[in-house]
Length: 189
Image 1 (tube, rainbow, N blue to C red):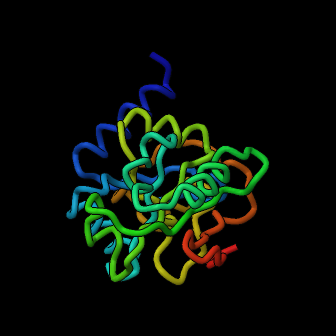
Image 2 (cartoon, helix red, strand yellow; image 1 turned 90 degrees about the horizontal axis):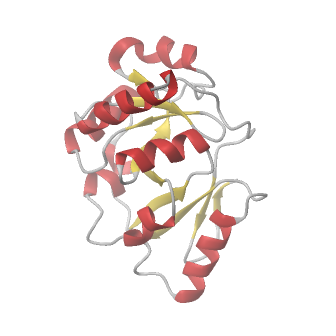
């Protein structure tokens, strides 16, 4: 087994054990955990000093993992969302989609939508695939501080409070675009 696979296995074990992990994404480092583990999500929010009302993003390895969150979309909306994730030349796009029964309040916060994305980052795809379902993805930084751009920044912010899955970001210069599926409005671009 290679060192890369061993680290990935350790990260998946950490997720299953309810721990918070840090990992590279398309542009910045993210903090993640099992979205259905309330204590793990609350730990991320404590680390970030972020209120639960704001909600967090869920990322997945592929469309099949995110499918349960798309059930309330029209066929046109669904086609638009999936096309954005399949377009390799398009920036990473996080979509705000209507809540389903699948989404706990500690994920959606005070919103009637949930933020979801199929990640374009290959290592993070492998992480979600190995975990078997989506994970939380929120920038690895305390609120008001710059997003971590490497594992050294993650460690400076959080020390040994998170498991760090070493790797490199995907080279994007901006975090994912966030769009509302109902209105098409870009909330972060």
